[in-house]
Image 1 (tube, rainbow, N blue to C red):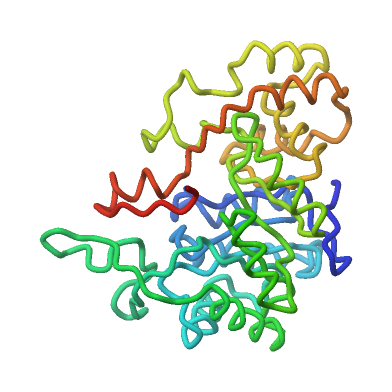
Image 2 (tube, rainbow, N blue to C red):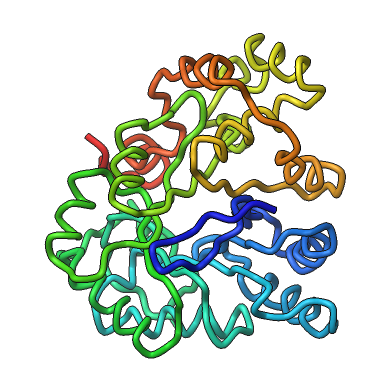
Length: 325
């Protein structure tokens, strides 16, 4: 499998297995199956609510002599309620305990959103609401500068708890500010990206700044149908342009869209609980898209962002909270 080289020269597998929306009851078995079919990069997060079960799957797989910890790339993310410096290490250690690991390969700031601290014993994962049992539950922001959180993440890196640190859902302005405030730039930026949201300027800025880019939701609307955050008409995989390219290469629409992503220099995280689809999503390195085909897919861009706090926080969490505008 192709790797994406980071600024440290570490190699991150270009196709990762995403653990968002993997049911807790299935998570251990899904992780073991993904490892069996060849996945070595796993993308986790406290907020996904399944890290303890993911950890069970990792531990059982690592008990097999055929796979070693150093063969795996494990990413997790710092949740919004733990941005204050005094909470960052504890949050990371909780993730490590749940995942049954001594270190992470990559720890990401999940959102440029700081929310009021919620102790583990009160609720974990903390979620978005400050008090979900309140009469009118809302998000409660906390005034924490990004650099405070970042320096605490750097301290965790210095202690060997994590190899690389990075951010999610940042734009160029926030990246510039962070890089101007710290001697340690992000190793990785994880963003939503697919042919309907190419984010070309942001991707180019990162590549010129030696920041690796990982695309979440690389297939577009697929992850959001069940959440009623996308309609069937918005499916990138149903576009005739994608279908024609897939037919020309004898590949599926999903393989073509994932190939477009890695060929433009980003890594991807994809999810499936079905073994055949797991294998399909990895099988994208035996063909190349032509420059014209790459352009056809890029030209589908309509700046359609499915995962936007400026939309879902108001509808789901009673709080207007834009971050991209």
